[in-house]
Amino acid sequence: MTSEDSPWLVVGLGNPGPRYAGNRHNVGAMVVAEMAAAAGVRLSAAKPARAVAAETRLGVLPGGRPGPRVVLATPLDFMNLSGGPVSGLMKYHRIEPERLVVLHDELDIDFGAVRLKLGGGEGGHNGLRSITKSLGTKDYHRVRLGIGRPPGRMDVADFVLRDFTSTERQELPFLLGDGADAVERLLHSGLEAAQQHHHSPR
Image (cartoon, rainbow, N blue to C red):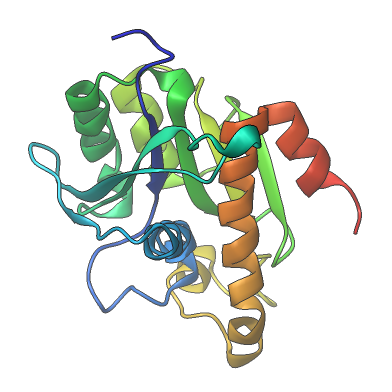
């Protein structure tokens, strides 16, 4: 299978179970759930990896051609163990790191903003750190979903493991939609075009 024939792997990070479902730390998983619903597919157990996943086509290309093949996935292990499920999915589907897109919460970006990058550091994010360690490379795409900084002296761990506030929840659908749009633009038009769209002032 050539690189052009292989699917993309789009992974939304989060912690498993209903206790964490509404946490800020789970916003990446929320975007993937939205993308699966929009595509009309259901995330289900993805052996041999500890993850739920679904294969689909993402959007429509110019001329009406179906968009690229993607595997949408969310690990079933806790955030700091994300690397194992991601690595397992990549091996099973024979996906190279340059065709991996990881969606994750980002403290250093204002709430509601979306940024994209290829490679670079993990910024203290345990999910990214685990993936980098498992893959042996940092050269994969990240869609960074801004959740802002904790107020006052609140501990960062407490902040990311709390649900979005009622005010934030009113704006959350826009963040989830922009995150999904960022993935589609990245896969359809490339990183630079997606960055130009989402990094420009609006």
